[in-house]
Image (cartoon, rainbow, N blue to C red; front, side, top):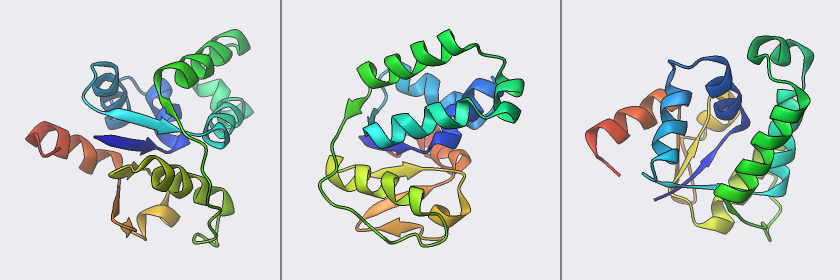
Length: 142
């Protein structure tokens, strides 16, 4: 099973140890599925983690953020998207997640982003909110 996680999943998992995003990260750490990333996604995760209002909530210093990004790059499957998409007009950066999913042949994109969620599916890739993905994991529906 191959999954692309939106930056909001990584960030939320660091802010809330009890939420669905954290549960998703734990299940990934246990090897229940593969996570696909691209350089663009890793860069966005780093950028978002460094936003002052976000940094205040997760309370991680720069060294810890760098270690997290290095771990992400080494433990996830890094893909280099060949196709550039312009599907999500409202937030162009959301297209990077679809590009990664297409290149890596992911089955799911997991996100809290309303622009991506309103697609619900793209080229056979199912786009789910974290709670729905956790429910799917719990039911063993993967």
